[in-house]
Image (cartoon, rainbow, N blue to C red; front, side, top):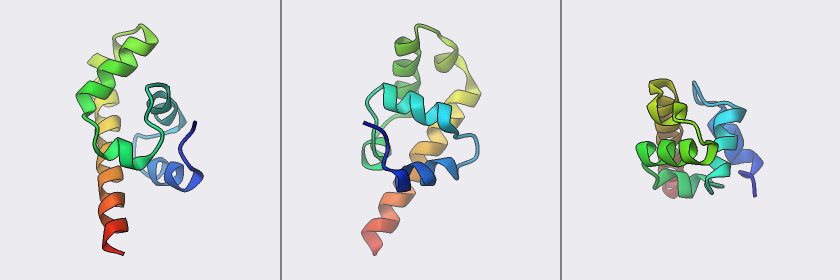
Length: 84
């Protein structure tokens, strides 16, 4: 199940987060911002690397940075939604 379109738009607005990053999150079972907001960047990168059978996602500072930025955006979106 993919991210809802409005949540996908939130993620695509984040520098370094594109369709591939979102697709990798979905591959490891992250399908909404609420789940992403509670995730750990290092754990997600390790899970993605395991899913792909390639260590690049686990070892890449760029990948880790993109996942961390996506998590921050999800947390910010959750805080903004709660304030409404």
